[in-house]
Image (cartoon, rainbow, N blue to C red):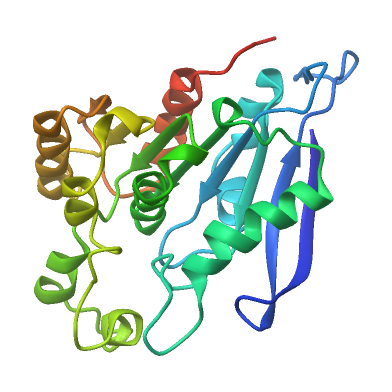
Length: 259
């Protein structure tokens, strides 16, 4: 695959930021890995990072390049800092960056498909929340969305778990009001037409502190009639678990063609 680290200026954020991008490349003589491409623009997975990470982390902590190469799948990994993929009350417009500016920029710079059936989103922890929020707010954009150990209950996190390293984080993001209806997954689900939602995937390790939140949200999705696959097996909030589960996610994606 082609690996690019792109530094660019974001108008939504009014600052320079980065994204890491993997693009399909057909290879036959590369030892240990074969790459695939399709005749048309490749499908694309937006892969979102967690709270303490950046756009390079999926490539550094997992074998995402090796897993994606035979699928002919482009992978776009943006950097959003500690934003919860939200237009912050006191900070950057990270939701606008993610949902509006980033896809337009990717489409202008790279030859990737813009069809709904070829577009996917996934993420871990904070990024799992971001992936589900993006799918619930813009379901027409995605064929599938996956959350790995997602922080699916931001209202509960805000009130129930302090972060001594960043004690005013949720105040900075959501202000004193807390998450709005557009930032709360449960309220987004209540207002959604489940027939229009993409296929959803939720997983979380049984030793993870977020397991109860994820099981509860899975149950709410099922009760609402959404199409959701879930996996709650052994695992903690760590990269050993996410490296395994991202392979499951890639196998689950409804890709039109596979090499």
